[in-house]
Image (cartoon, rainbow, N blue to C red; front, side, top):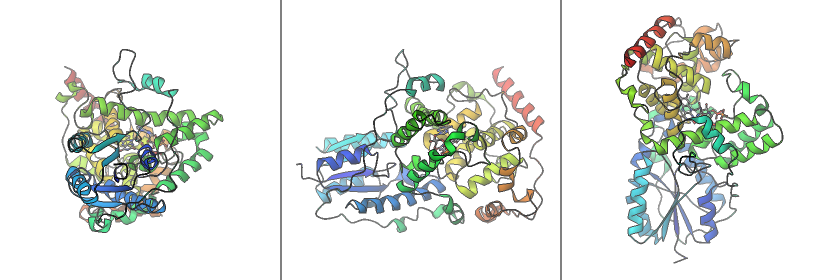
Length: 470
Ligand SMILES: Cc1cc2nc3c(=O)[nH]c(=O)nc-3n(C[C@H](O)[C@H](O)[C@H](O)COP(=O)(O)OP(=O)(O)OC[C@H]3O[C@@H](n4cnc5c(N)ncnc54)[C@H](O)[C@@H]3O)c2cc1C
């Protein structure tokens, strides 16, 4: 029994260090068979996330080779693929790191039940989060719906130390056949975008760790204020790595704790943001509908507009509102968007353009290389006002005022909007290369007039809000 290989079903845990499942598997001394399954749930990812996932998988395959393992790639429904692999290899079990989103949970429950009933060892491990969402409870035994008390509950709570990366693992006598990553063409829906976005990606564990070190080496000191300035490289940029598990959250947390203990200004704020990610997962576990339905059902009667021509201009970075357009164009060029800009762009769509937050959520899911099911949903419901602990709807961000405050010298807007400069920079021009040709955008044309006057949009949003309450 103990010689039977173990299948390691890897998903969003594409790293060697701080990987409890891998560490436990290596410790058994059994031959290990890592597999990545391109199942329908993974196929359903948005264009940019799917493409970026392909880069992560390729890099992880290289990392596994260094410890003597090979990543097997298979396509098909997860359970069928895993059962076939068990039959081919004589594996005694399948292990994986837990996921928490509504697409993954029912699949994983089904896999676990089927494997167990076939007498196989089916084990799931923690590792994607610092705390399992059901382990953090209010004094009354419920879950947290508001961030500040959640933060109080987790701020000083122990987080398991990151496991060391294994140097070597036992390989099976024979490797199962693998499909080729190139044949999956995970970037198929990226059109011309992939070549533009690629230089902004820092793929894999070593790159993620280097980013963390560079951030803690300096920018963390100014993080509390700089994290709000989209024109400044003031944040860690770890979201793309955390979402695919290219770096472990426990490792990041412990590094942040050390910085706090050393008295580094900003380390506390950084830890707090890591807890926001955790809170998003806490909410998604307890209320999975957060990913697709108004978290507060009273919002169901709100007269959101579905997809509409104004929303198209928002997607195109052509609203005529420079802060909003810079944000949308940043996403097209780099695959990510600054947090302050996400708030402004989201608020503008849901309030000034009175458009359903799900239109924005879906667009972000298609365009972000750091797309995360929990943080994206929580972020959108927060900006829309329909979520737990959300910004009150009547607090409508003014993109122009926000730009004056957070992009005072217009560095961010100029960086991404070609029409605002006489000599636009490469990133501002790259946007026009990245977007679909069918949009017919041209940097030589004048910058568009605003879709809606800001005061008018605000008044319209507040009127709709008032009508909803009546
Ligand atoms: C409408 C909207 C949509 C969003 N969609 C996503 C998404 O799809 N994926 C994603 O990772 N984040 C999302 N966020 C949260 C946030 O904008 C990003 O996590 C952040 O900009 C990533 O940059 P960074 O890694 O430099 O963060 P840092 O400021 O360096 O923070 C460190 C880490 O803390 C976490 N974090 C920081 N801010 C938040 C936050 N507000 N909510 C949850 N976690 C946070 C992230 O894991 C981040 O990598 C969204 C926010 C909004 C308002």
